[in-house]
Image 1 (cartoon, one colour):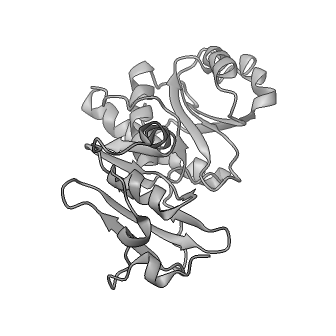
Image 2: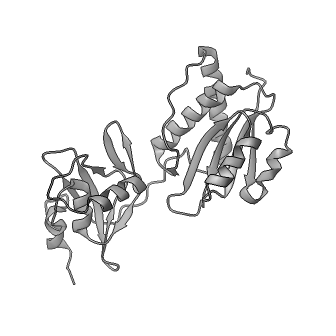
Image 3: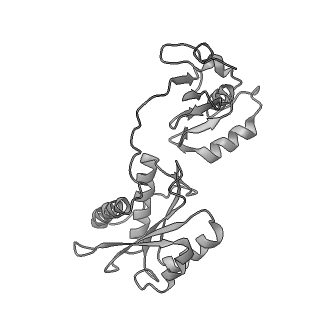
Length: 259
């Protein structure tokens, strides 16, 4: 690719996506792209992909992905990135987005690290930094860690002694909900006496990812009861009013008044 290549970004709303057919920079050219959902959501949805012809690839996404609103399409101005290059960019993009977990990625599976020549690795890492810069300039924080908010909630914790599971959350009194916090780790195995298996599996599929053998919650989620939340984490029947404890060891039921 070389130092003379520049990364260009095209921002195309879904309703105008057919413009890609007539843009010579995009039609028939390798590209790295991001499909964005409603970025006003607390945890926006996104899909990161690569293609050798976005003008053609976008047709499949129009038919099969109804949630996205905007496409960010990144190309090289001199068209000197190729099929394996954009696969490597996709690998870097998914890895970077997952590391900060600012968006909910809807990619079905993580791609394997492509095997490209060492000098191309260096070129693509430089090119990807340009992608990150342009993405940030557009106002999309998919590669940026969420800004830490001042901690005002009274946090409670639950963990299993016989399995790898650790939950963090707080009780939201006015709606009487328990908020499970991002980063909570769910037990991989459940005990035979645990009944809401279908609900737990559905919750994990919608809100968690599996990384290095751990089931990790990707964003804060409100649940109707502390017991439901602790049961999901532990994979066993649980009295959340007793099992959730703060940093001083006090039970949730001793701290929060129940109506």
